[in-house]
Image (cartoon, rainbow, N blue to C red; front, top):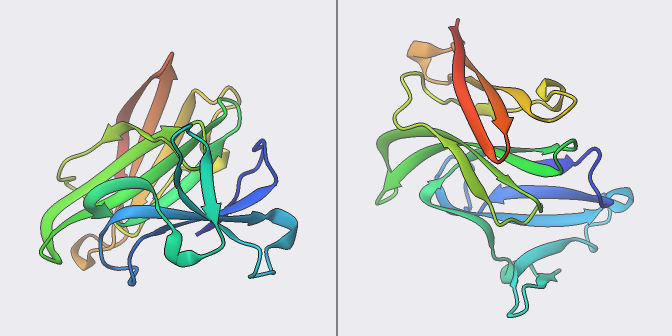
Length: 190
């Protein structure tokens, strides 16, 4: 997923991906690459996040093999989306997680929201469900148009992917006061 963060304080396009060879297998980490927005077609200028050094400076490399995680959730990183909340200066990650054990789905479906001041973290979990009654699906998303002007109210969506629930969606509403987000389900629609 490549995302140009509208209103962001830098001129980069970011690509978040689970650290896995296959999109349908849960990983334990999310990796991040970035490129200057006006050079997105030049494959030789990308920078991969590697790690923070001892003085908390970010280390990046063009060598993909040196990439490091910007986000970790053991065996639970799967479908994700990132949106920049320009009013609050926060990056928000929504993630559908299908926890795996020994490479197999364990039957635990979660949806979560995480926030950070920086595209590379550190991330703080602000909401997490355990065993949603509606399959979290392939899409878990906070569209930028669904964030209020002051950044303190939002709506996020998930769309079920299981055949028995296909087309069902959940709509969640979030409100932020100080550093605390409160979420509630608005509807389960089909």
